[in-house]
Length: 145
Image 1 (cartoon, rainbow, N blue to C red):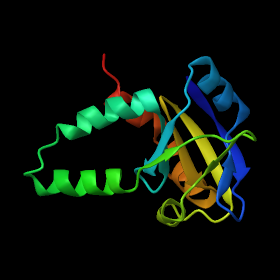
Image 2: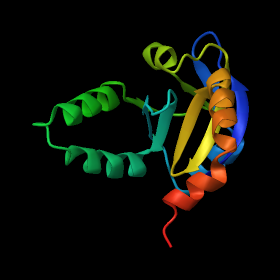
Image 3: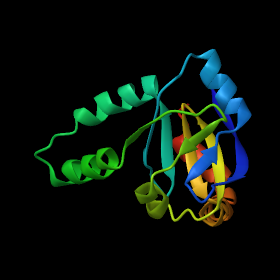
Image 4: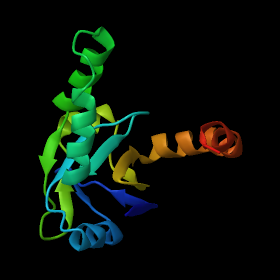
């Protein structure tokens, strides 16, 4: 549902325009509510509500008796914000999440099938450059036969 890579800017008030293709996909799938939280590798994760509920159910199964599980759930859920897209196609990125992802102005918005990742432009390009050479090797290790 969510595919592609788009460069955008975030305004001084923390508003970010969601790419038109993503807004169209949300409209087609009747997505009205999104959840934005701390992601992995220094980006932010943006989930449509249905996918958020699925992820939430899986993470609820992590035993709270394990320190690593508590740590992960605290970081993931304490940063979460329920988000809606305004009439101009923008969403508001909370200050704490902008700081976490080191977002200042330029961002890259990446569709990763069922979620969107929001990266600072600098971090995305560093990740991309570090990852692109080994893409085929990673594919061989993670793909099931």
